[in-house]
Length: 114
Length: 116
Image (tube, rainbow over all chains, first blue to last red; front, side):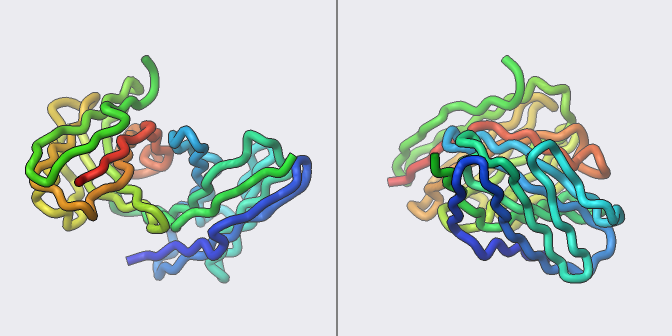
């Protein structure tokens, strides 16, 4: 089974600064999808950004961007101009191109310091 | 209401009780999911339903029994649970359970379950 590893249980960032959350994964597949989900204290998880493995270009959504290194099996999330509302648990997830399985990491708790 | 809703939001039950968790989605999706979220552990996928048929069961103990009467509703029936089953149970839905349309899952707020 695929595994997703988030090695930073907790991170903090000053408001307006930039922070990078790391994620690595293990797979033997060539086609797959990667995601970052955000779970604020209210607990409703929402999709932040996704990346298709066949695309070389890194995905970007406003202040959120990823650094996808396929050979290294690395998928980090960069949050620019951090805002207080960015404080949440962030989960990295993997899905194969086939099948129904999603694999999640253990999450990184991000604190934004005013 | 819009999105994915779950009831109840909190549930405390004894090991001999029978209870049910309910999930409802108002997004016109055809796939629904149950996840278990425990502290310091990865989110665990429990069940996947596609068009009311179960397409995935990740070796979940039989004390958890899912039911999907239609594409908008998903239940998780609980009986004779153990204290280690205490967790946040999340429901999610997506347009389909396969292909690109499965890539965006919309999550409910979860039910915090405590088993005494």
